[in-house]
Amino acid sequence: MDGRIRRGGAAVEPGSFGSATGDQGAAARTPPTLVVLSESDPVARAVEARWGTAEPTGFHVDGAPVRQLEGGLLCVRRPGPHLYDERLDLRLPGPVLDRRPTLVFPSIHRSESKIRCFTVHPLGNLGGQADHGGRPRTLVPTDPWRMTATLRGLAEEARALGLPATFEATHHGPELGLPAFFAEVALPEGAEPSDAEVSVLAKAIRAAVPDPGDRVALAVGGGHYAPRFTDLAMDRHWAFGHILCRHAFADLDAATSRAASQATPRAEGVLYARAQDRELPAFVGLGPALREADAPRRDDRPARPTSTSSPTSGT
Image 1 (cartoon, helix red, strand yellow):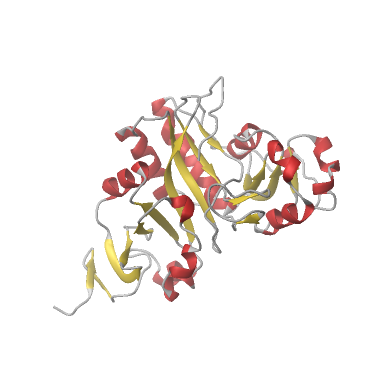
Image 2 (cartoon, rainbow, N blue to C red):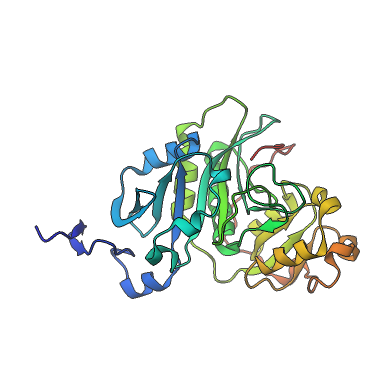
């Protein structure tokens, strides 16, 4: 044996990673996705079980191997709840950190209204409280293209189940220095994710391909479940980073709004759910107000199941 890992007949040096079948140089230049699998989260455990044991890359995080699935997706198992895995980025091995991966956290979301659905959302605390990880008035970098691609994939895959997929507004921790978002199965308290729901989430995360035609905006206003911005991402070439919902306005200051814009890479401006919100002190001078029609319609948008009510508070 020559000590190299075999993938589909190709030998790979320990400590290397990238696409095993495509252009290795191009793969090395493209920021990967690193899926963080919490041992304490039933959805994350189920996603890991569905994927099976992936190839080790030779890198480790606190003793846990960083593994690579076919197609280049990286994953690592972590103890404890996702919400409190603070500054995980600082624990990544240098060669992984240097590629600036987007961290994706498959997770359970407890829906008080008992509505089953799928959600994706950016991370951070907009106000002066940090009751669920992170720090007050501290926002995590976003990956608008990948998060939006995951939402669209969830919506397409969930059609067969008759379940909706939706954005949530920015909320909770952990604090991170890399782009990150949660991808969730929303379930009533006490319910376990079905095999079909896990399959939808696992497939959407693996299959998410950012659309280079998407324009990026900071989203401001609307409810916590951001129905207007969800519709825009599904119907038009809009990708969103941070989403600042209306119920956060009372404790939102101008500095945090600017931080949200700065943490939304290549944002061209702000899309407001209500035109009058742009006059609020927290948003004055934030950037140009964009129009919904500034982005063209998507020709491949799937039909979406609708719900008469939105899921309520969870993580």
